[in-house]
Image (cartoon, rainbow, N blue to C red; front, side):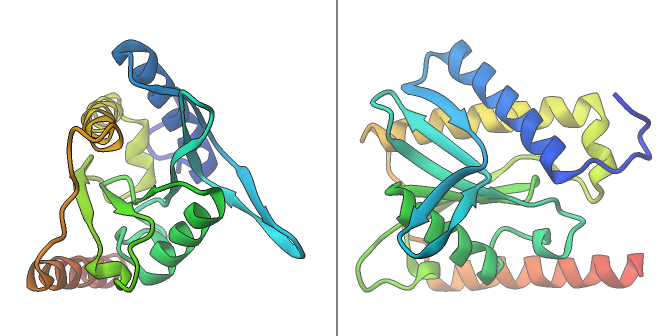
Length: 196
């Protein structure tokens, strides 16, 4: 590992995440055959869209797709940023995945890709706390990496229950969703002001 002051890039972190998820899938015996990154979802006449993460089920179908951002980047302040959620949902739709995630290292949100006539923030989703970092350089710390692996293990176990129909993701009350997103926006603004 490099020095703690080295800024970890998103692609490097994605590579680490894929390795950790692969290890968890093998170690836990979960019903997924692979985890892949940068897979394309083409549409005729349009440029392909690249997935940060695709969890493939044991039949070779995309079970889940996801978008990952670092928390010290503008587009990674929190996993509810509208552009991030729309991008992740569109990619999941193209891939035919029933589920997608948005993840900014600290918080991973599992979303149901399609619910007819239901706005995205009113859909079923579940939030998973994974880590508590402010800067990408913290991703080099062994204790942070262990925390992320543990959080991913919990998420993958829970997602397995949802995917196999033994668990459910529920709709949150609108006021709970609003307050959560407002707090995340305010925390992002406070971080920007204190760091700038």
